[in-house]
Each structure stands twice: as structure tokens, then as C-alpha cells.
Image 1 (cartoon, one colour):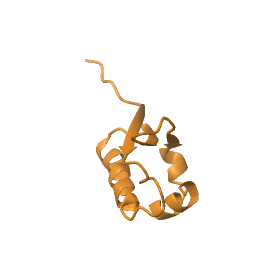
Image 2: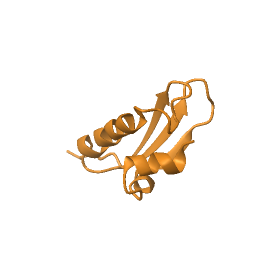
Image 3: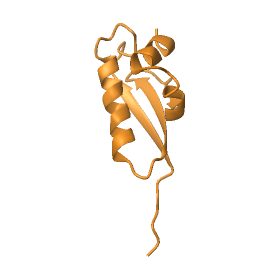
Image 4: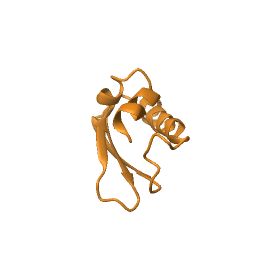
Amino acid sequence: MKKWACTHIFVTVYFKDNSLTKTNLNLEKDLNSIFNLFEKTITPKALVEYNFIEVSSDDGIRFKDHEIKKYASTLDFINNNFN
């Protein structure tokens, strides 16, 4: 029997309008939950690309997991990529 492995995952995550901002007190916790879900539950490891988008928007913000991991923390990622 041949085993198949997922090598790439594209995840679109929808947020309420005006919540992809530094002022959203829950954004760090929400992103940590999302990152942990894919980091700790998918084996073998796959390249994960996230598309963060607000419900009424057509424009998402895309990041690959290895780009996000370059930041010291999720809060550092937020501060450098969201208004």
C-alpha cells in the first residue's frame, strides 16, 4: 500500500471586519491557536501558507509559516505586519 503525505497546506482564515489590527486584544491568542493547530497536529510537517482576510474584504494577507517563524513572537509578527 502506498502512503501519501500532504506537503503543502493553504489555509484561509476569516476574521470579523476591523479585527486584523494591533488593537484587537484577541489577535495574538487567535493566531497562536491557529499556528499551534497546524504545527502540532499535521505529520509529517507540511509547508503551511496562511491567508488572513476580513469577512467583507477581497484582499487577504498571505504568509508562509517559515516567514512567520522569523519573528521573535506572534506579537512581534503582529506589530510588524498589521496596522
